[in-house]
Image (cartoon, rainbow, N blue to C red):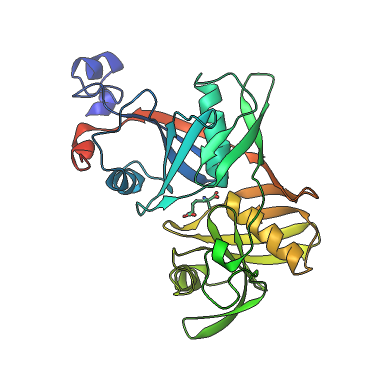
Length: 314
Ligand code: ZDR
């Protein structure tokens, strides 16, 4: 029936996709970095005080009953930097940091007029992270280079249980699901466990990923990277994300993978990481800091319906 009506008729019936019954509902924007997609909410302009944020993340991230995403990211004011970023995974757990998320965060605040700075200081659970926007001639942010800070390697920093808490876990034995793995663990503010495998494409990521994510060795769970070094400057990787499952890409995971490959003598400190969603350029510089460069894209903006929000009122 709708197909035979013109736009004016539909609008007069009050059923255009842009109208909302209640008006003034929560606005959001979907952005992604290499298909690692998040729902961004401007919590400077909008008061989220009345919402249970864990529930909000779960409900909005649902790809069938909500908007759909690997999680939600809140844009907040900051005393310590230009903005503060909070990241909630699709299961409602909060992550300290998100590499793909921070690139898209920088694009969002610039393109939506919250700042005109092209070098930002973003306060995260992993400290101040510094994205630098690479803006094209049309004023659009296409790529972002991020100073991700220094990786932390001590077991106690991951955190990972085991003897010698102050020492790194490099090719350390880990028993999961009845199998033994040699794992290298890196904190990029959030925990990562890197496993080198021969065949990334056919690896049972969805079976082994959760066994390692939830292993007793990792008291706050862990992100898990399955990587294969193609040559000294190229690494293929698939990720099983803590709290979100397999995703198209992982910025902090790509950084952790280059650190693990360099520490085990498999690759250089500068490498391209090839993910399901595309490539990230990672450099573990001589100053000890990691620089990640990659794209960020916006998909759409919208307003959350009242009936969805009613489910998550605090
Ligand atoms: C992997 C990730 N999307 C990124 O790009 O760095 C981070 C998301 C947060 C992750 N699932 C965690 O640490 O819980």
